[in-house]
Length: 141
Image (tube, rainbow, N blue to C red; front, top):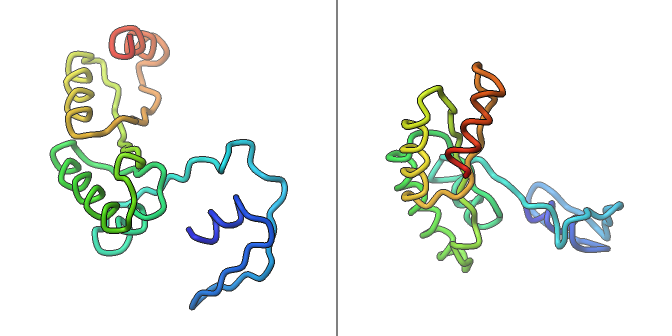
């Protein structure tokens, strides 16, 4: 992740690591978003991947119900603070299944919000566009 960020933001980037080395590397064209596109990291492993996400991610994404992920979100907060980052700078993302029961979807959205998640990735439901429109009107209002 250090290499990716370095290449997206720095001309003549140099990196000396155990497994990777770069010397005076420049990536062109530069991304339109500045300083770089948001870097999303999907991670649930608390020993290896979540510390990487806490250190480098702009968006942390994880799968599971909100009751399972709320403690992991707290862990991301602790890991970010230990890495010297503001935990609020890391958006929390999860996946939301849009079902025909929009009352249940609304409750699920509220649970995610209460758990600190502000970004939900939704798949296209089998019921199609009509349900998407109902979801957008009712939930996204």
